Length: 256
Image (tube, rainbow, N blue to C red; front, side, top):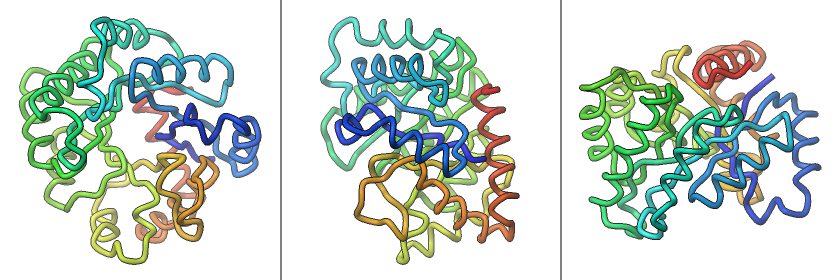
């Protein structure tokens, strides 16, 4: 059994067939799925889905590209939702210099707020990082000075040095379909260095479909392809790797 630790099941591409998608996941032995908020509205949607389907847990937050669009009470709603039992984490948060949709200082302000919320309520945070590895590490180091970090570098695509620094700060490293892409030998080399007790798998559905499904809509059932790739890198069978990553996810997100 696997756990898809990062999906966006409220996305429009799932509106017509979500129940079929969830059946596909069950048939592929995907035990649980974490659906992730990127705005106050989608965080509420994540909670609604988690309340509707026992297979789903919610993570709530405002993704860095959307922080400039926040309304005055949006973060208050995130704080309220974060305390619900169906919510197992905070995010996705972080920094993004690729799209430039929000000033980096504002992204940084809310990145810190999300981490502080995570520390207050003892639920892990999920980090989005794009073209901003050094900036993200700086924030993580700053926040780690006051309290141990407990979080995930989601859809990791950084280098070994960044991964090792994040591990030293207490973070887990999660890999999505990009690790299966033929050209990504360097990312596979990084994945091979991650200790088994700190590695997670995800789809980032409906994005980043793994090989051999690249270019198609991604869905949680497809996490098996990423897991198989990572298992091979670590010299494990798929079953052995599934047991490890499922145990990691259950401990980190306090899922029974």
